Image (tube, rainbow, N blue to C red):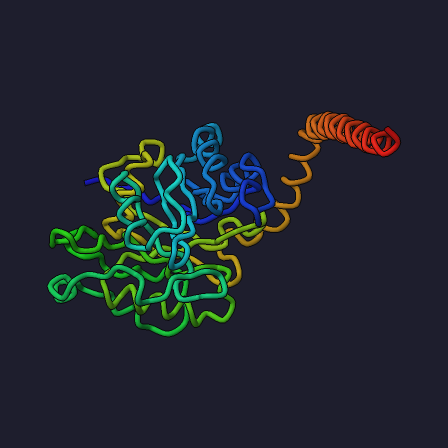
Length: 314
């Protein structure tokens, strides 16, 4: 059977996120230039820009996949492949179930790092004893260090579905390499946890600035496709569930290194040169509107004070 490999960065933030900086058009342009096949915009608790990115991704030769990084009661969760915003602040297992019931994949981002709202180990839904016995962890997941190209843990035979009615729905994958975890300890711990429970592993940049997009990424083997052009978003989600993943990443870029920094600077300059006039006009219009509103409010406040002052002498 034929197969192709697609490279995806499943965890990127745009200007739609409170801590993001880049427009989705620029992110998509950069991702295509450095050789990615897909990038999932996962802004914090908002999905509007991600849906827009997924819609226009084919214009850049990319696979369009929406997603969001949702804040649960126990930490952050990546909901990939959903086009609606999951409920915020709900228990982790409940949110996982919500995502999977709607055809998405639930991925644990930067697990165990509480300073970045990573979920604690005890709150991650895990397989029951029967599933754990059937799992076949990848020994490479126990190896120290963070070598590029390491194979992800083998997935559970049931592909992540729970086998007992009423049991907590399990997550689909663990982010075993996050490019922003500087010491590497949490990444190694995440890899060991994924191997222990038979979860597929993914790598992601968690980029908030353009030059870091693709700094870590996941290669997925797509069965039955002749070329990347044939691959759909559903194919990508299925590959994640099946665990046909290879994580790629170091705390310095790999094959995309030279293109990352010089290319990102050039693309950013070109993008804002193209869009600067339009953005400037919008900013001017916003300023004028805001000024008019402020003047109206000031006039109403002045009239109110004048009436109060006159009432004292009535």
